[in-house]
Image (cartoon, rainbow, N blue to C red):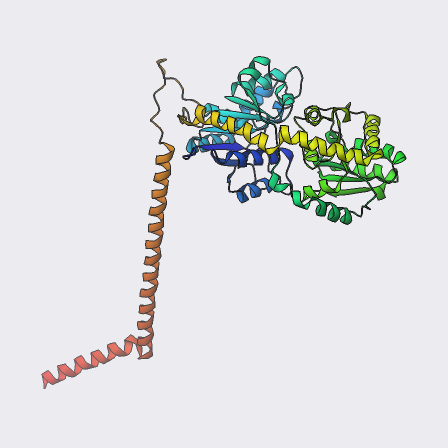
Length: 495
């Protein structure tokens, strides 16, 4: 794959100060794909994602594209609303840009980022639709399923849970699975002990005080912070020395503030630390003794639980969506409790706090199992197989654009086949042409620079001559002298 094909990856969000689990997944995915393909990452705005992507050498393109949240929560009017979005300026600009770039294929992240695959398919560009969440199950779910099925060449699911909404025949013929992993370079393995000591010192956590953690990129009701607080009230009755760390940016501020007030009303303010966005997550995980994930939605996967295990922490979680897949793989299925059962959540935490040595052993063993299933080596092995298949399937014969921004070409009035499109320039030739144009522009810029320098020199010479003339009396005196000479000559001739 020395001559790498160009692909485009679409991120549905790019938060300015923090980074969500979906953004981290796509960034890691893009970095791991970059040895196989020339990756262009498209994001709606500048943010932490785009800054990190550039620092890793990825090409970035900013392009605001409307999201279609109805694909996640389907409803009867979804197809009509999508058609309306396809009439908008953003969609036509997206089509025009894709037609210009002509990537070998595109990858869109999350089900709500529906316009990129629609635009790509209208142009004949292959689509891989990456699904990292569980589509809401209701009477209109088949609308979303058919939308994804008909506008993708392959569906890449983050877990069995995320793929479950698709019928069995689609799962067998079109759906592949690529669970997330982590980047060993960002784990800071050798500094874990130091990070733990420093972070606990900053938080004023004494050595004998167990620290129970809660982590969410954006905290809202669905992420269960209120359940975590109520659990802490029950745990405090048996383990009053326990402390609690809440990491995450408030997504729903009124909900977040209600949880903070609940802590104060229960008299646990001195036991809690609310730290907002955490710049160094490894330090936060290292400081914890166990992690609780009380998510109330059917998680597509559950990156927080995976990260907790990656740092050798025991995890207690609600049995919500993909969280079961992770805890079962870690051999910790008994630490799952029914979603919403706060009492059962507190029981599991109390059991771990009662024997902290056992809890630490559970975390270490779970980390070994998770490494085998979800570690970087397992991830790269899966991705290599996918990348080789995509290269053979989509890149050996580059796509031929079949339509403009308005969609595929219309059939002639006579009902015959549409006129053949002229062959599109091959990517290698196009790159050579662009390089040549760049060289020509460089030569023109240098020639213009020399011309400007010559003009400045001429202006300086003329200015110097004018200065000399002014110093010697100027042009009027010279012309007066010349006239006097002519009169003198005429008098001599007359005499």
